[in-house]
Image (tube, rainbow, N blue to C red):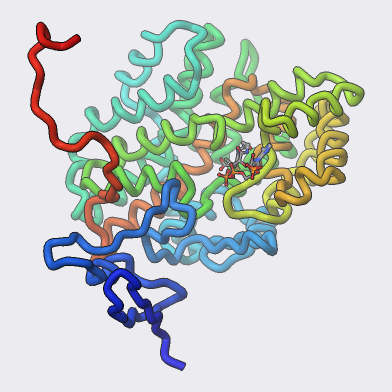
Length: 427
Ligand code: CMC
């Protein structure tokens, strides 16, 4: 059987044969389907890109029906158990796990760039103490675009690599600047001799005495960064690619990606889950919330996913990680509410019939809270991990000869042409 699709246009009676490749037809092949020579040709209408592939990618594979997530072919379960965030970032960006020498070089290249320009600290200090950390965080990446004008040379590979080192290194430092400012405490210089998560924890939580992160918490945070590192063409990654497609520098593109992540339907959901669990407060209040959700009055935060129609594999790993963290910190009293909420929802036909399961954000906030992060920092933690994926996807975009500036079409249904009416003649 040929790999083609035959279309009959009943408006004209004409038949067209379109090639099918990798399970897709080319949307531009539809343009030949016209009713008149001056007709622009048939388009597809796909708000929210429910069924449109915008790129070919080698980075991340998801099988949403079977709860499978792989980075460059490696199952997320194996990476979470055996890899580190820095190694996973290398894997995502370069396509292979590093050798011993490459891993040492990579750690050195990131470690050497952990400090951010003084201007970023000044910018952060100009915000009100209660400014949302994500607002400060995304502003800092816009500032870095101005501070590193060399980053405009995106066609030059060594220049791109330098920006990738700088961005991965800047992410925890910028986050720490915002946190320290919000808590009214002086900035702590990064320490490249520590691990990536260990340095981050030290920048945040060093007080009057030296701070040594608990190894279980340090490892748990690293696992959370691995789990958040990439998730193919989600909203913020599509934004990174969309902004990047105009050939702007990666800092500007990342400011856009961070802005997209901020929303409550995306990375902002982890903060939303904690606020929701706090509001619920006790197991006895759950049925009332479930009724509100079923009546369409609110969403159950941390539930549902565009791609996963089974249990999000990241949520399973996070649940196991939570046990390890709580063994150190003591349990989070909201855990019982979360577990009961999950159980009640998964027995309810509303959630079962819509295939709504806990996603990555459902349990992560409980861990972050137990580790001492305020809820407003949760989405920043997501952003630090996702930096790896954004950079890998940006690198792939820049090297993809098929990519052009992103420019969707529209179906115009506004007013037909009409003449301007002067103000005094309008009724
Ligand atoms: N609570 C209640 N109902 C829901 C939920 C939810 N969390 N999610 C989806 N539904 C219902 C929705 O009302 C709709 O029902 P109906 O067919 O009767 O209209 C049906 O399920 C399909 O929902 P949808 O909005 O068409 O699905 P989507 O693929 O556009 O949205 C989503 C995906 C993640 C935005 C959505 O599930 C949601 O809003 N979840 C809550 C926010 C959240 O946890 N976001 C984090 C996502 S995972 C990490 C990340 O991407 O950052």
